[in-house]
Image 1 (cartoon, rainbow over the protein chains, first blue to last red):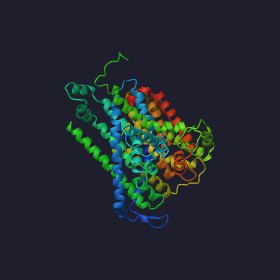
Image 2 (image 1 turned 90 degrees about the horizontal axis):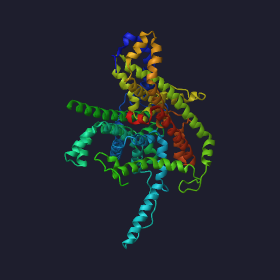
Image 3 (image 1 turned 90 degrees about the vertical axis):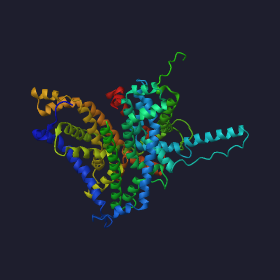
Image 4 (image 1 turned 180 degrees about the vertical axis):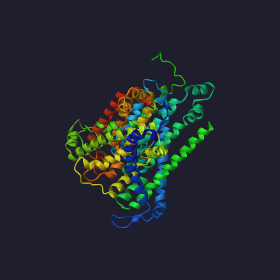
Length: 304
Length: 278
């Protein structure tokens, strides 16, 4: 960047021209709605459509009941598992893109990014169609089962019973798979951008000095790609924690996540103050995650 | 075949397991979408076996008034939200890039919040907000879409601001000063010098805002009324209550639209731009 920034006082008119619209919009259509939610979280229902903001902490007390606490913890566990699976699948993919021939690299990146641009609902729906009891995933499993059965007859054992389609949808497995499907591009892109900046001669040096590929990977590549890993984890974990659509459409009765509980307070249960309190607890959880990350990156900066 | 060079240590991409890994990942990402697109042409109500080619579900989808209305609503909202987000986002970027002012960190932080705050919380906030201020819900089209459009602008413009600000970092301020020395007014310098420089980022930001708006389900779900159904909300209720092949046809249309938009973006930025941008 060239030239210093201007002080707003010396350029009041141009400053007002550029600042008014964004600041006004942010205050009216972001801060005001969020403030109302925050105030409602300290209120109680005082009639069918009336909420009395009495400063009560009952909503927060209720949120710490085991029923809600366990859903919170479960959401965190599901989001963490999703992130871990995305990291395991995504790291080799990001490595492959980094070390691909230059003419292939943009196409591979496009391949990762295109689903990311596709409508979330359509992607979830497409995955559901594939996972239904008549879907291709069940057919594939059925094929494997028959193959195994045939192998058993080859070695003289009893064949397996006929394949019955399994219920792949509407359970926790489906929720995690759906979340991985949706969030995988989020993980790959930051990993790629970190790996791309990495000095490749360091890997060569490590290999030349006798370390194996695995050791080089663990002791050279992973530490150097750490900022990308942290960014990828955050960018996957945060939306996965607040996921609504995937658990709603693909989950069963026992796989609801925190966002589904919040939605219910506003639609069926009609307990807005409690829903507001849960929303803010979710937001606080995000803030804690972000604070942990920035503390970590500050530490890294100091260490250097 | 025999003349292949040996795989160098760093050519991870040429190793078989790596290739299969990438191949399987791509299969995982694309198989559901491709199966959905293929079966949208299938002449069978149950999407299991291929019964022959037909366009009847496209015809049905295009004759389904509520589905078409939802699509028109979605595109209208996306269009309006993109234009307004573009203006507000670009102004915000110029403000943060050019000026020093009190509470700048606070403004900057608050502006990134709509990106971070979970969709469900933002959706709930808009539901409460529009109920609290008694936002009129019986306006004629397209004014009845205003609540959804406002909500979309709130989460779209910070993305535009981010993209434009990244581009502004490479602007040479001396060019603007030269223009002013030569007699250009503040506005002329903005229009003729700064604006052409940030044009690529405006295109990128517009496409980003358009897709984000078109894609949004959760926030719209909380701000839409019975007369303001958008495409994702419509598909949601169709998937929820009865899966019909019409959804496949309508989804295929939207996927094709998305791919087309992506390729327009590529034309502007170039294929190399993708790998450079990250």
